[in-house]
Structure formats: C-alpha cells, structure tokens
Image (cartoon, rainbow, N blue to C red; front, side, top):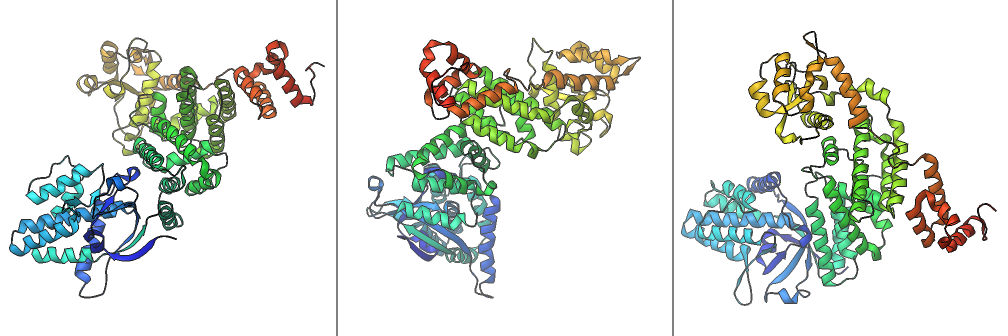
Length: 624
C-alpha cells in the first residue's frame, strides 16, 4: 500500500507549512459541547497527572490525502495541501483551542505572554508561504469567513459576532481560558501539543479511501451512510477530477436535504429496500449489502438514483409539511412505511403517476395506518409486505403497473383491520386521550388535534381549519386520566375563545358560546348531544368513532377498482412476457385489457404472434 503511517504529536500537525482542506461532502462542523468538554477534560487530566504518572491523551487516527500535486491550479508555493478524509472535527476543534489560547495569552499583556501569543500564532495558527504570505491552516469554504473572523478578532482584541457559525465552540474555549494565569495557560498549551495521534497520509486517493474503510467498517464505528460515502468516492467512475467533484456535490446535497433526520442512516436503509430486492440482515449490514449487490461500474447510476430518492425522502419526512398525510406519519413516526412513501413520491416526480393517483394513494395509506395504529397492532406484522411492495413500486414502469402493485398491497393488508376490532379497541387506546393534568396524556396533543381537525374537515366546506390557530378544549373540565380526557369530551377552538370565553363555564354555557361564536360547523351543532340538560358523551363518542372509520379515515382495499382475479391474471402475464419489451410496454399501457387488445386489434398482430409463441410455442389464437 502506498501510504505512510506515523505516530505524531498535535504540535507536528500544526507547525508544518500546510493547509487542511475539508471536502465538499463533509464540510459541516457537528461537534457539540459534550465533545468539546470531553477533549478539554482529557487535556486538563494530563495537567494534573503529569508529575504522578506517565500519561498522555490519544486523539485517534487522522487520515489525509496529499493532493498538492493534483491541485496545481490552487497550489500555494511552499504550502502542502492535505484533504481530510477522516478527522475534520478533531482538527478543527484543536485549531479553535489554539486560537483561544493565543487570544488569552495576548490578553494577559505581559512581555512573556505576548511572545508566547506570537509563537502560537506564527507556528500553529498560520502557515508561511514561499512568498511570506500568512495562510490560515483550515480551508473549509463553508466556514472560511467564520474562521478568518475568529483569527482576526483575536488578533485585534475585538468582539466576535454571535452570527459566526463557530461562535459557540470558540466562546466555550475562550470562557474556559479566561480564568487561567500565564502558568496555567502555558501548561495547558504544552499538554495539548503533546497529545498523540496516528497520521496516515497517501497521495493515491483510492488507497486512502481504502485505509479509511478498513479503519472504520470492521468495528462499525461510523454510520452506514459514512461508509457508503467513502465507498462511492473511492470507486465511482470515471476517475476524472470534474466528475468526482460533481459526485461530491451530489453527496453534499443528499446530506443537506436530509439533515433534519434524527438518524440519516434511515435514508440509506429505506432506499436500499426500494433499490435492491435482497434484504439486508439488519440495519448495520445495509452498506455491506450495497457493496455486494451494486457493481463498481454502476456506482455513478446508483448515486444518481440515491440523489433522486433523497429529495423524495426529504419531502415525505419534512416535519413542516402541510400535507395531512405526511403530517400524520410524522406524528406517529411510522418508519416502516417511509420506503414506500418515498418510492411513490419518486414515481410522481418522474411523472409516471398522476397527481390524483399520488394523493389518493398517500391518503389511503394514511387511512390504513390510522386504523392499524388505532387497534394497537405492531408494525412487524406487515413490515415484509411493505418492504416487498416498496421494491416493486420503485421499479414499476407505468401508472397501470403501479395501480396493480399498489392495489394488491391494499388487498393484502386489508386482512389486518376490521370495524369490530376498531370499535372494541378505539377508546382504550391511550394515544387518543388528552389532558394537561397528566404528563402521559399531554404529549398526545399533536395527534388528538390532528384527528379532530381531520374529523371537522368533513363538514367544513366553506372555510379552512388552521391547526396553528386552534387549541384543544375540554367540554367537561380537564381532570386528568378520566372520561373527560376522551375524544368524546374534546373539541377545538381558537385560542381567544378558549381562554376568554370558555374558561370556568359549565358545559351548557360552553356549547351555547361555541354555537354562537365558533366558525367550526361541528361546534355549532354540539347542542344535539344535550339531553335533559346532560351532555351525552357516550353517543358523541360512538358517532366520532363511526365517522372516523367510515368517512374520515375510510380505507379502500380496492382503491383502483381491481379485484384479486384481475391482479393474479396481470401478474401471470407479466411473468410470462418478462424480457420482451414490446409486450411489456403493451401490458403496462393496457393492464387487464392486454389479451383483449391483442386478440381484437389488428395493429397488434405482431404482438399477438409473439405472445402466443410465449404461451404455446407456435402462432395460434386463444380460442383455437
């Protein structure tokens, strides 16, 4: 292998004339206070332990690509450029610590401290080019302005603006050193510079990516998406600088589109379910599966498809989405259906399916999962069906093909829900209770409000209900986990009516006020549940439950008008003609009328001949 491995000290990394270049695909600085605290604590421990035991901190392995010779147009004479393959967070954080130390030495304002400050600045903060130009050592286009501002304000004793992206980590270290005297600062600096690292450098890009993978993949220390990034950047073809830069830009966009995810590995996991028929053994073996199933020559196409999918995935996981179907899945955090939702979104963006088919499908999926979740069933009962259907949908060729695949899925999952089960379990489901007096129920506010909004939409024909303007109101007073927390005792009002008009009123007065002042139609008819001066909460509960199942969240197992025999016949024909483009195209455009068209339409005579050869091995008609 053409790489060098050396044991280094932090001092060695920052005192040589170089720049550390952050690649496009990993420019974000993501370390938080817990990471800063851990590093700071380790250095301080060495200060205390130095005289008692031989102990030093190990910062880990830094993997660098020496690409100075390749980037001749950007080269600064006398400066070596190293692309950071692994170690950006550590190199950047230590750099901020060194600047913070420099700033505090200057602030002490003694001759010896000024000299120590200038030593830090000229040795570890900047590199000197052949033309005596001072070069900032971290080259990260996303943070260049911010890092330069930190250096500049520290040099001129000015205040750093809070809008600076690196304000928090730099302030953290600056605040720490504020109380240090010269001796404490000097000791800290020496201990910091003595920290051990293992440095691996190569000028062969493929080789250094291989080192990175070996270091990280075996122990699964990195996320699947990080390992996949390394694999793609190592092998993607053609190995031309412009093409690789374009690939890095695509990767950066994928990360940017999905940085709202709590675990970005979910994107890769769900994409793989759609892209590869074979399933990974578990979530930590998805990268391994991709390596096995996607040929190196196909990595460029894979990245292109992942880029397309990531945009769709970003859309269906957008926590600010106003689409009620996406909002529901976000509230419930239904992970298992995301692969399917994103696949459907991809087909819509490709214009394979129409807007109506797209929204009807999403709505029907939402309705099924609402009923499924309401009856408190576990997702593993339908996980495999969902995963298998997501793969078929992603690879579907036409809207007709999509409808057959989707309708078959609806027929299969319909077996898991029924009205009797819904009726018996609905009001025992704690997720549908709400009370501000009980912390377990207070967290249900989003789901309860969502259900009521969707329920009230059924009669709200002339105005739009804005959930942001509505609050949940208890008709009978809120008293914790009792019948008063059930949906049958809840309604929605504007915040003004809720606080100003309804507070401390009895239920008859509340209903009268809502009838007069609420713009919600169902609020205006709540009086029908007042019987003999009492509110018939039980009957309202029955009405809500029935209308949720039959109207509001009605699931249609035959959404596209296809029965099981239609689907079975279609699948049989599809399997027979696989690999014959003309017949496949006709099937995808005609669906269940495929054989009828072949038999009766003269313009399909050639198709007819090919089809009958598939069936019988000779040219004969169906009826012969």
